[in-house]
Image (cartoon, rainbow, N blue to C red; front, side, top):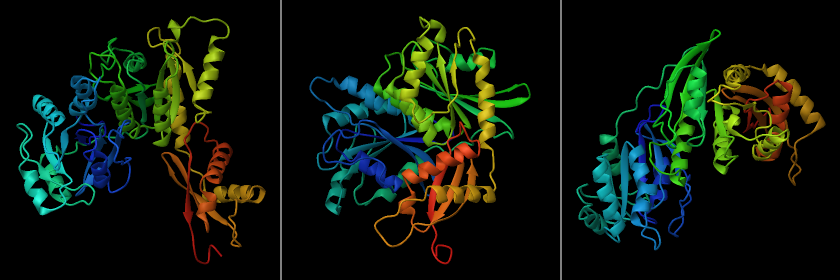
Length: 448
């Protein structure tokens, strides 16, 4: 299924320990997934943007399908494979040439055929010509012959990716950006009220709203204008599943949130006041900050909470504890059902978007940097070579990003860079914006 940024999605599917994570890393040309000989290491599935021959896509490393005792094959297929198939534009079905077609493989092949999605079958660990011949003899149901590959060495990968690109749908153009438009993603776990909140913000019933977790199938863009300010509301999604919210569903919801956040200035992270704060809420908010969007925490369904004089204070304390990394995020107790304080959300989003657009002159950055370094110099390692912070400059404003040049970046990165970030944020009025500091090395005369 096409992602909200227009890129097609490729899911790597197979039983445990056939090399899915190794292939994931090989295609991305970097180590993003943990690789281990022990089966079942990939539990929290990985996803990343990748490219091959200038074609961009989302690549997903799924968990393995198993026949563990006590776990029915149908349960595992539902959670690990069926969701992946439903989401993907193309499936890379990975087998092990040394073991051939196993019982789990046969079950997955049947499921793939039912969905009718494009599939490229790959026989991994084909490290020589003899194994290539064996790979060609593996036929997975009606999905065709397997292509030989060694994910560990990259042998055969070019041929596999050629097949992938032949059937992978082209990327679609993302939505046209309107000048001055505030892009707001509404994100959160399934069934916390995202679509209801968007409906309340828009003032009419634009989204399908249902009590079943995951009614919204994909991101839906709704442009609106309020008091002269243009907004693009991006309603992200749960899954269209008539079942309980499972770890697999939570994962896909987080993936869709990540896609939408990349297009956004501000993300409204919706929490369910009746359910409290979950680990998944925190993960979604943390990934949002990592991707550079400003955050508003919207505590929805506040009208359904039994309250006394301490209720709001206690909830706020829990939020402060769980979201330590968002000390200046606006907090709105609201109700999509009654409209309580809904009107605060978009003005806050516009305010945060305006903060992100600030540009600080290089002269101001360096005056502050000099003051900081004089009062709190960077740490020096056990060496006679002094750590010098040479100069800094703002290099971007989406999000606000400052580059700091030094002769010894290893002594400035980490704690000291975070200290600089907090100083920049406070001094230049970037409260609510995810300010970033990147440390770069400078040699030569300037360093001396």
